[in-house]
Image (cartoon, rainbow, N blue to C red; front, side, top):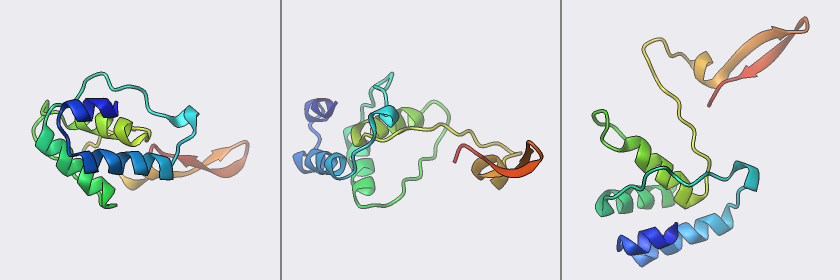
Length: 116
């Protein structure tokens, strides 16, 4: 997939940074992301997003529906060799819905993990 970045004329140093990241932080094959359904086209946005992640910073994507935010995330996860999770936020979302909460199982209190 890194050849896609080369075809899009993404800076070679950025591609090299992704390659180094993948070597430094390998992922078990069971967790490896699948090929994204759609490719993200947008050289400037891709370069900026990749650089932010290579610097170890978080990336906040905001915008109207159907502007490619999920597609960008799926592509970034694939480039970096990381799993991708889709968690929808809504008005009734709380921390227990995301992180998890205590629950009873077989008469004992156990922690039920959330998606995050």
